[in-house]
Image (cartoon, rainbow, N blue to C red):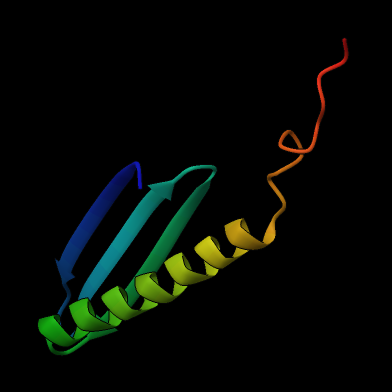
Length: 74
């Protein structure tokens, strides 16, 4: 995680929570609204957690070992 911005807003009837999270090579953004601010924050945290798990799974599935099996030419 490189940078995280959190915005909490109050409209007339709803409370909104927004989070933008900058990770290596990707920007994750989640938003949730609820009459209860704490419920909106919990929902945003759950959504962001799911996005981070998906992002990490994609990184693990991508083969990064191309240089490990490369033998130096002499």
